[in-house]
Image 1 (cartoon, rainbow, N blue to C red):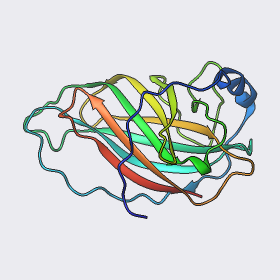
Image 2 (tube, one colour):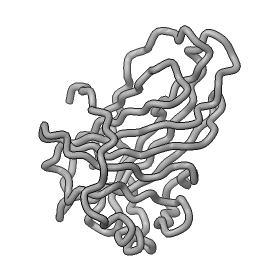
Image 3 (cartoon, helix red, strand yellow):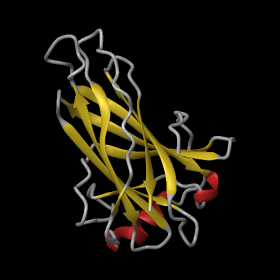
Length: 201
């Protein structure tokens, strides 16, 4: 499937099911994850500033044992290799969006963050989520797609990495071969938006 741009959104959740679902999933574990097919973005020109880029480095997907949820784990890096000078400023906030067809989504609800402590579900099979990640909103884009937002607030130095694992409520039964577009932006950066496409099996 060709690369497509996803719409950045700050939409709000429809309904208040996020917290109860989190409690329901507290004992959930991850099924054996299938590696998502990731398409590399073309090389970008060097940044004119000394700022890094919030780059999607890896993404894998699978399903929760709870059959209602798609699952994914994303690793991002503050890639300073395109900066005009070093060291680069720490990335202190960031946004990741995950967009796919509305037909592949279940009832719209924010993502459920895994391995983040508190009431989030523990998923031993996946890398821990950095505690700086939280669930943002979910938005029906009005064009047959839906976008889920994840928010980062921390301090990521040049070449540092951060990871987030999460579940997305899907239909029953879940669909397979779901094509997703993932974007990442960070601040402070040079305005670069990284886009990757993947397939969740």
